[in-house]
Length: 120
Image (cartoon, rainbow, N blue to C red; front, side, top):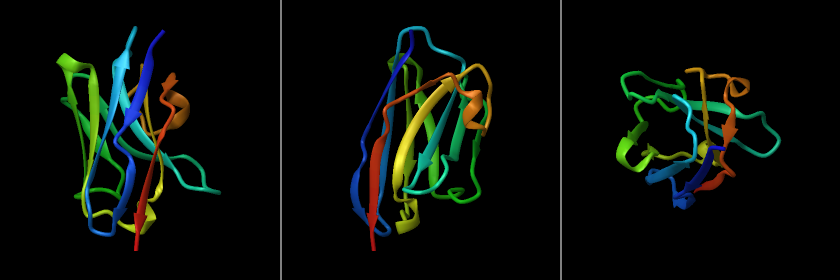
């Protein structure tokens, strides 16, 4: 059973940076994604990466600001977030699944989430 544990969230001012980590254990799938969910809103795609790292895709809202990466030796994926805006405030989730996708339903396992709050 694969388990994902996110860390790295917190409170940051507008324009600041944070790096989220997602450590995977157990049987892992091939592809990973980051999603976020703000209060009262649906879960939103942020970034996706194939496990080989050869293919990545970011949502338009975070292009040029967020970068997804991975450390194969540590079974960990990261989301480096820069130039943060108040609208980036949300609970951020990592997920893994058999499909490289922007759709939450395509992912099989999810972490517990980590809160990111950007103050204005």
